[in-house]
Length: 263
Image 1 (cartoon, rainbow, N blue to C red):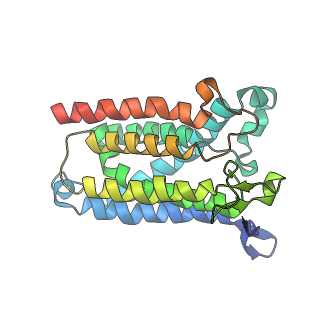
Image 2: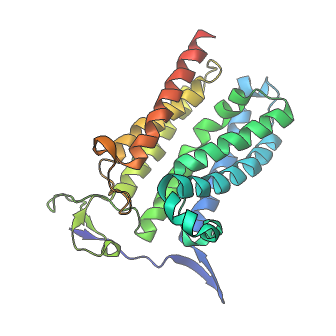
Image 3: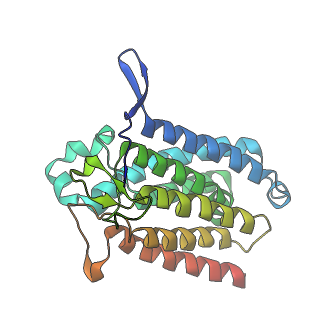
């Protein structure tokens, strides 16, 4: 069995200031988004629609606000509503951890809707532009989870060559390194498929729909290898909270994809 390396969560120390790996992964995610989205605006069908590289920086600003607010609110409301109802001020303490992808997604959707309205763009055109640029950021976040030794996987057969002990879990059980599974699936695989699919003009909303379906299916699959949150466990039908949140995501994505195909 492998043993998690127990990385120091602080990547860089500058006197009394420590820069955490997870924070650096956010920076990596945002830089990758800038680079990829600017490349998207240079594709003929986006350039002809009036998009320019300068628009991407404004998009990123709105997206960052949506990720932070939505991610934190999603964690508070989806995962620990009772706890934060008793400790409301702690909902503001983002440095203590606790972010939800699905909440972040809703936050980004709201932020992009505001951006689209202010700039006079169709909302689905905005989401179609940015969707293929998101998976690399998701991969960076999961790398941060792995470095921190958090969100570890379920018990695995010790003979599995990559089975790993996470001392942070408080046990010596061999586990799936599910964070790395998610890097491969929701990050690399989803990026490759979406980037290829979005190279050509598609129906309005189809790229966004493909992202929702793709992420939802891959995240749902990865959850079978990820240890459910201790304070929640599994819910109805033996599914985790992450899996249940993927269900409406896939349904919405399938509807968007079908709708775009009829347009």
